[in-house]
Amino acid sequence: ADEPCSAIPELVVEILSPSQSFGAVAQKAADYLEAGIPRVWIVDPQAKSITVFYPDAPPKTFTGSQAIQDDFLPGLKVVPQDVFAQAGIP
Image 1 (cartoon, rainbow, N blue to C red):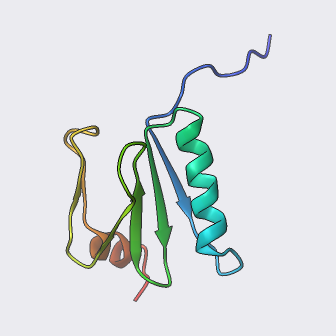
Image 2 (image 1 turned 30 degrees about the vertical axis):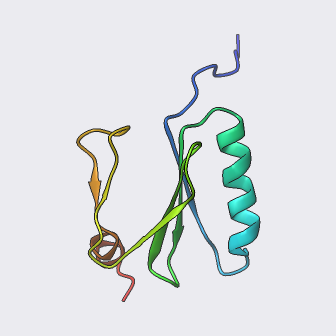
């Protein structure tokens, strides 16, 4: 039987496409938080930034060598410039 997945992910990552506005995706992030997902990241390849949305604090945008480290996701360290370099985005 196909049961719906009842597990809530701890992190959702949205990658902004050129046809999407940041505002529209930010609204989607707010919807995810409201649904109980504790972290949402919006990756913007054009701005080479990653914006982290929290349920209890304003969003924070990381660029360049600013490492994203989060007590909620222990052991995870993401550096935006490394992500974009690995993806081949100059």
